[in-house]
Image 1 (cartoon, protein in one colour):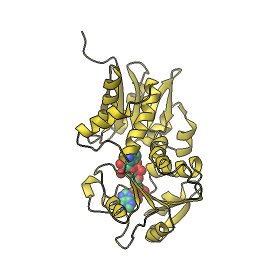
Image 2 (image 1 turned 90 degrees about the horizontal axis):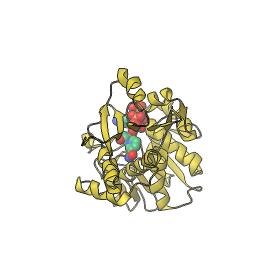
Image 3 (image 1 turned 90 degrees about the vertical axis):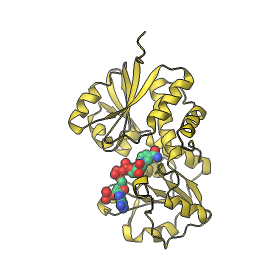
Image 4 (image 1 turned 120 degrees about the vertical axis):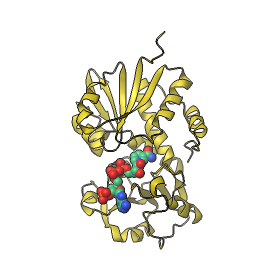
Length: 279
Ligand code: NAP
């Protein structure tokens, strides 16, 4: 018998060696008895078209897309979901009636742990640090899905913040003052990642307070310096792992038509030395 699974899903990016997505998806397939495989595909830009053409909806059912190709794939799909269209980036692709469709599940993944904190955010004010692809998904979630009273964006290159619709742009040098006014602070910069874990996107003069929520999209390390300082000040803290699991669950549902078995996924992450996606 051929042990190679007939169906697979892939993660397209460069570089992608550190990704937790294979652990998440393969644990979910195993728990449901689905004989699929999720693999990593480190793709160079000149191979992107060929890789996308290989997503036939049969053998290769679909793909997730990560840095640096979320915008490039957005340009290349045949159709985009309304969410992907609004965000301007694609992180999930699949075939529908032969056409390659682009979706953005980062929005759903970002929202789910935030809705566990409170269901109504309409009176809240938020600051988003950074203005890259993840910031665009976060801004869409906060302005369009949750309808916050005010969403501010602060980025070291102000022009990138200005390109995000429906937000107030705050100069990078004034980000701490903006955070003082905010109920929610979201870090979408990579500052504080494992490669630079002693760094923080906010200067030490900024002290969080109870009643504030800090949401750091970084998931490695699990506790960033920013998260530790917010927790020490009594703020509510959400790390990047619940979003990672949430965006994976939304992609899994698209490809398999089934709900991701989250408990099995959390166990697999714990077995891998990661605390399992709890908020
Ligand atoms: P991106 O498109 O490269 O954007 C990164 C943003 O951070 C840009 O505004 C960039 O500014 C800014 N930045 C980078 N280095 C900085 C520094 N030293 N100081 C100040 N600002 C800096 O990346 P992305 O796709 O948005 O991802 C950003 C982060 O979110 C990554 O850590 C990624 O792992 C994380 N993420 C997590 C999830 C999850 O599921 N948890 C999902 C998506 C992304 P410039 O334009 O000036 O470089």
